[in-house]
Length: 312
Length: 199
Image (cartoon, rainbow over all chains, first blue to last red; front, side, top):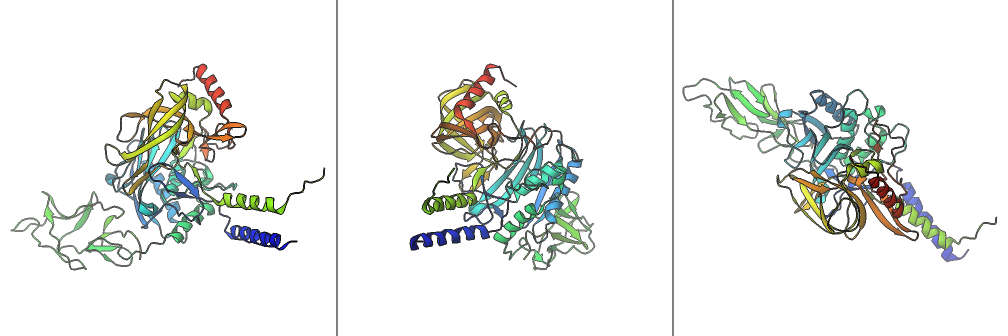
């Protein structure tokens, strides 16, 4: 054999070996290289040099407006959310926030799931996911619209909200349709089978691919004035003698009778030493008006907290 | 039959090209769609054209919460409906400034490319009814020029489609993954239009 042929064979074999040494994953990610022309996304493997769409935070709050579907929709969405939260090794945490904070289908800093007869999803479209991307294929918002003309279920019959929501949530995380031909179809293959109610390894590998390729280096997971306590953002200590509460994702405490008015406290210090002046709204003292994108307010041990947007 | 002699030089590059091609990305959709047969597509859409994309402009919708793209096309053949030679269709998605609205599963339209498009008027977020590919990737067929003539391949060919009972079996797009000749597609569409296939 001539040396040129040997060299060619060696080079070719090496190249094929390198390709073959990549894990034979079937899942695919959504890549956007659009400059205004392309409105869909390309399906690419995890190692594609062009990268793929991804989040730069890990706590993603979804707000569901089930107005045109019914209250059972929320429980079905919870089921789908929990499937993705249960992926071992992933630090993504999806949460369903109160419906009162639900925005619409489109960029409004709120990740919303809505049931509608329009939004570009009609007739043969069951559900549609929109991604709002910043530079670098960074997802800054996702919205999902479900077609109200479809008969939805939550009992594994067509079309089960749990399965379709899990499928669309996968898209919201930057995952495209898989090439898998496995008998137990991954959720990202089809979103409507009984066995798609749980994620398959192919789905989990797709999420872990995103986690590994785009780790979140979170140095400040809290809004200004908040202190990360290892799990959440400790925002404010309650004023003495008051009972804090959350209403419509805003922070309040009940008005206290005082000669100078109902909200007389100059403020009180949070752990960061910031003072805040509550305002009387006619019934209660308003401390903070939410909602903050991807953060949820809550009360714990009579103090005010926000969920973090990521975990250091 | 004696095997043909095939040189290493000819097989090697071909094998490498095939292997590399398998690793490259391909455009495809990512919404959940019920499979639409050709009869469904013809019935559900008021306008069917063969057209070439001449240009596009992206902009924020009237509610300033979604980026839309207007595509300017020149029609070369009208298979259903009555439209001008120059038409504009509107799609959700596009890039305006630093932000992009990405609609995975939308029809994928590129400059100077020809397509068979199934169109109808529908309101999109923040718009009055506009001419759009409402069936998304199912409503657009790429046209490829081959030695045997023009070929039409559904953009939904790689998709996970369901039939109207939620069953994926047989939920193949018109022409399947390989597509079909453009002439054959046009004849089929014309026959359905002549039968009065309206929904």
